[in-house]
Amino acid sequence: MIKVLHLSDIHLGSGFIHGKVNPETGLNTRFEDFVGTLERCIDRALAEPVDLVLFGGDAFPDATPAPYIQQAFARQFRRLGEAGIPVVLLVGNHDQHSQGSGGASLCIYRTLGVPQVVVGDRLETHRIVTSGGTVQVLTLPWLNRSTLMTKAEVEGLSMLEVGEVLLDRLRVALEGEIRQLDPALPTILLGHLMVDAAEFGAERLLAVGKGFTVPLAFLTRDCFDYVALGHVHKHQVLCREPFVIYPGSIERVDFSEEKEEKGFVLVELARGQTQVEFCPLSVRSFCTIEVDLTESNDPQQELLQTIARQSIADAVVRVMYSLRSEQLALMNEVELHQALAIAHTYTIQAQVVAQVSRSRLPELGVGSTVSPLEALQAYIQNRADLRDLEEPMVEAAKQLLGEADAWVQPALVRLELEAEAGRSTAGRLTAGDSNLGEVEPTGEEVQLRLL
Ligand SMILES: [Mn+2]
Image: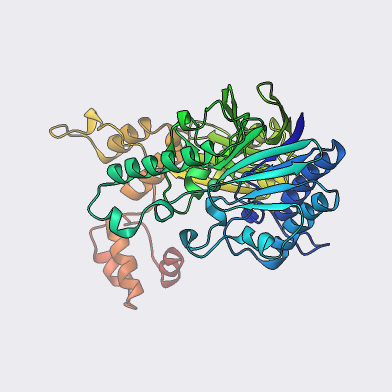
């Protein structure tokens, strides 16, 4: 029996947007999370100890990570070498430079001849001697068109036809490798690929180049005792005879992995009796809080209560709420920030919902004659959000319309305008047609009214 630890999709250096700078180290906290999680995988490999570690590809977000990121990765895998545990590093799509033509970030381990490290950057069978016995590992890195076809061969073919030719080539190449396998040895297929039966996740968006989907039947051959996959971030067991497993990514790369359990797979490899165990990793949680506040009378309170019901302590949180423009004034950002302060990091996205189109009011339709005040009242009656303001609005309208018991009278308005223009007012007023007959206006009075 050979004990194997299978992990995949480390993506070290991803998701910085969900972290913050750790003032003590100057490093992004999400980088520290990823390194810490990788460390726990290697800890487990050493503690068991396992006989072999398989990495299913996608070490970094791209093929040229910053030196400190490469070093953090190397520092962890070095511990396996020091313990005499062989490791196979498979090349994923994110590890290839220039669609594969520029080599792969992981090839440096082979170039330097790092002991115990095997790099899988081509379809090839590696015979690896472990403390549990010899094992055959067939590596199937991320394949793109240029790996299997020349440009001339692709020319004039539709995407569908290209896909068919690619699968034919893969079938032939895989068959060639399988025929050379030693049937007496336990055998693993280690592949970075998309299987047609798999459920997609973030990798669909992360994939740089378009690859192709491999039918599950290509992999479920009885010559394999275990099929170790990489690429899909959601852990899944696609087949049990033989076991075909995606361990998934070790950390949440983004919110699309919010609900997924993260971990690695421990395998007890034996011809025809392989056993597997998924080992969950306790990683930082992601939490989406989505609230529709458009119907709320107290949107601020409702939002705070919704947040209080979630376990957001030390989590990466995103709050998304929608509200109507007239509710904006009811929101208190400071309180919101206070409520979210216990999160590791958080983002707030407020969406102002466009005014719902209202039905036309029949009482204001063509042909009906209503006074401006009646029209206003009909309008307010149909606007739930304005109903509380009916009284002051009508009062203000009355003032504007001159129907209130106000002093505003047409003649007086004229008087004011003339006064403004600096004219003498007294004579004009007495000669005017206003009903201010008793008033003995003085210059001062006019001045007063103009204020
Ligand atoms: Mn991938």
